[in-house]
Amino acid sequence: MSERPHMTLAGVVLDSPDARELAAFYQRLLGWSVVQDEPEWVKLGAPDGGPGLSFQTEERYVRPVWPAGPGDPQMSVHLDIHVTDLDEAGAHAEKAGATQADYQPQEDVRVYLDPAGHPFCLFL
Image 1 (cartoon, one colour):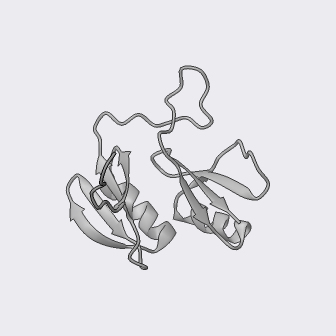
Image 2: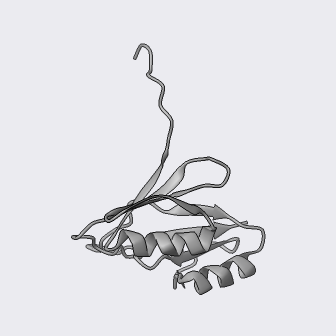
C-alpha cells in the first residue's frame, strides 16, 4: 500500500430501536452534549473533543445477548469506560438506566447493559 489518505476516527455508532432514547441514556451516563439531533440519528460530543458517540434508529434491531450462547444474537461492539470507583460508577450507571449483567468475568471490571442491550464495561 503506497500512501494512505488522512483518516480520523470521528465516532462509534450504536444501533437501537430508538436513537433518541438510547442517546438520552448515554447523555445521562457520560454527561456529554448532543451535537447532532435528527429523527433517526443523534450524536453526542465528548467534552475533550475526541471521537463522538452516535445512535441510529434501526427498525429491525435485535437486542444482543451477553454472553451469547449458540444461536443467540451476538454483540457487535462494546464500550469500555474507565472509572476510579466501580461501586460509585455502577450505582450511577444503574440510576441512568443500565442493568448490571448477570455474568461478571473479572473482579476489576463490571459489565452493564444499556437500555437497548449493548454491553459496556466499567473498569479501573
